[in-house]
Length: 254
Ligand code: NDP
Image 1 (tube, rainbow, N blue to C red):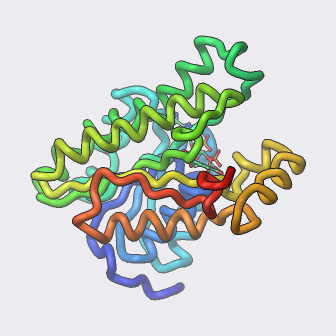
Image 2: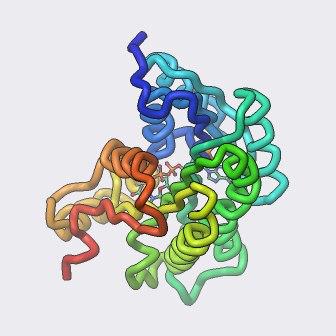
């Protein structure tokens, strides 16, 4: 077992959607830097337990908790379970859970896909913050990092429900950053470009080749590169209300 570093020692971390992909990498990184970490998942218990195993191997402390963060009740139950398990308020909340609904273009978007994207990708961050912030206020220290997307900022008619919901998430970041700054709580977004995860691979090899060609650095990003941005935002107290692009300059390329 590895020796954990102490960068986030005794800071309780909660990662929504930690059963795979970006959420797993963030959970393992925070835990291996000393943060007792709650790994939330929706359906994939096996994946969440694998994340916990990876945390243990890295010398950290982690526990998996099932909850559907699309409702205020689900988020409240998750946070109170996290606080019960570790005996302290949650200090670091990473709103990572996300869906990219199958879409046949904006004209075919249905109420169900729009609503599901909005609840999972944007409203869940509000519900989790509502549940975590009272404890962060008491602690006088908190970090909220929302995983948004460059597609919340760039015209994306093919995935409108996703794009709309990620733009809403960045609006949440700005509003909460202003409101929570005086309490010692920073709120930021990390907006990845195309990262090599199951979500991206589902789009197919043709799409991936197209993105690799369009991305100035010539490849997909890695989950570790997104994780490094999250850790930096958890570290620096004067960065708040920011959206940090982690996209290999894709959003700047014509
Ligand atoms: P994955 O599809 O691999 O994982 C999504 C995670 O979200 C899973 O752990 C899933 O849990 C969880 N989840 C989904 N719905 C809920 C819910 N209602 N309650 C709790 N958990 C839920 O995604 P990625 O790792 O690729 O992406 C992670 C985040 O990064 C997302 O917000 C995504 O939009 C964003 N992002 C990803 C990019 C990419 O290229 N991959 C690019 C830009 C942004 P379970 O497995 O249990 O269902």
